[in-house]
Image 1: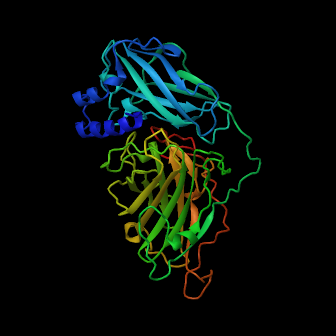
Image 2 (image 1 turned 135 degrees about the horizontal axis):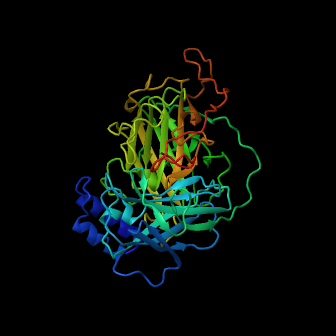
Image 3 (image 1 turned 30 degrees about the vertical axis):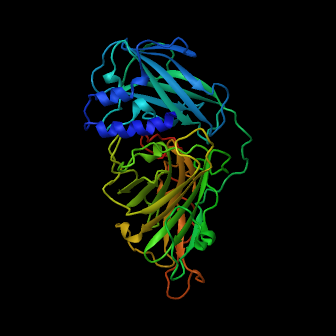
Length: 468
């Protein structure tokens, strides 16, 4: 069975057999993960490390695929081999960070991989459950962030509990007590020398003609979609540069009527992944492939009473409402915002390729969604009037990073509402100042220039490529 197909079945069974936040690993879990538990260390570990964590755990070595120079956007497979020396107390988990050449964290993949599927309070096979003498095969996959600007990135890892990390007594490490797993050379192409505009983009969206019907089937084949408002290609979320990645990209079309807004994503993705259980409620979609919609109905970009909606290639949905910038939240694994809020979304997805199968090269996926105005319970006016402006942003995501309609420009993370684009709700033949309608929010005001900020933690790295 292909690894991703196996992982899809595995995760569903693991979650079905999980008992709350208990630290006990069920027999079902052990059985499903037995291929990742070895009695002896392999004799063919390509990269020897022998990093000693407090005489309790040893990182024997790793395997990297590919080993040579990698390009921004390229996918990397990392396999680490851990040997348990002595039983640990409860509470210990694994982390993995990707750093750029300056040492800044640009990617967090703490809970990526079969051993690390998150179970409310812990990873499915956390180090606290490891048996002395056994070797644990820790497989992870990630993509080199497309916005990387250094010719080398570094992979670091460790074992953490709360604010503590197991002390590294021997082996290569950095000043933050993180084991240095590998340095990867990055092959940078020609970079754009043009300075992108700092102003947020604007999009006029005309109301559908009376009687227009859309079938939510993931096809976007109605005439209204063909002529609807289009964001154009997404750009680098950190810099606003043209997206040069061949592996991930996207664009969005928008429509509206008196009952709902309609969103149509067209995503380019050469490896479409969706490994969540089919009945998952508000799964952390940003850790794999997904699209994301941010909505600030008041249009002022102040990060008060805004909404987040994500839809992945399995047509699973994460939706939440936030009171303020990234608040409320419970670190490290949520809930994020008010997850009891529902967008009452109707959506459909069409995958151009084969989900979770590397045997063929995918071409991406299409997401079509209808979001009723009544779902936006904190909006001052719903539906909007012709001439109203809302602040919104759209993302095509992979491994907690991605591309955006409006770039964040290192002013925070994907939640930064002052960097959301402006969506003007209009109708055919209407112009600003037309009698009987409110004037739109001026689109000439400069973008907000707040300091870069963003809480740290799992999935909430201050690096601009992170969504949380």
